[in-house]
Image: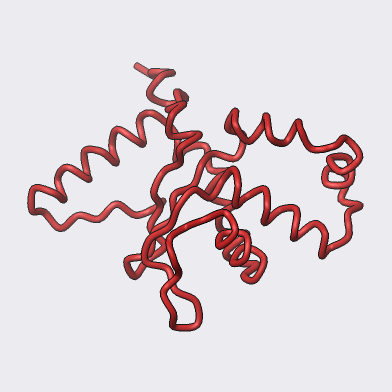
Length: 148
C-alpha cells in the first residue's frame, strides 16, 4: 500500500532545524528546508521592492549574491563540521562566517541551495531510514549515511 505519510510526510522539526549532510572527507553541513516556516516568515519581512527585484531577477549581481548569502546564512545553513578554507579549519558556525564563505564560494552557495530545495531529504520515511543506518553505525558496522 502506498502510504502518503511515508512518501510525502515531512518532519517539521527537521525542516527548520536542518538535517546533517555529508560533503565528503569528514565534512558535514546542517541545512534547513528552503520553504521552512521560519524562512518564509523572514522572506515576507523583506521589503516588497527588494522581494520584487529578487523574484524578477532585476537585482544587480553583487547585490543578489549578498542578499542570497545573508538569507542562506541566517535561515537555511545552520551549522558545519570539518570544513576548511585554504588549508585552515573554519571556526564554529556563525551567520557571519556562513555569509562570508557563501559569498566567496559560489559552488558552496549553490550546493547549500540545492540541498535545501531537496524535499526528499526532509521526508519522514528518509529520516527514519537515516536514523536506522545511524544506529547501525554506532553499533559497530561501517555503513555511512551519505546524501543521495
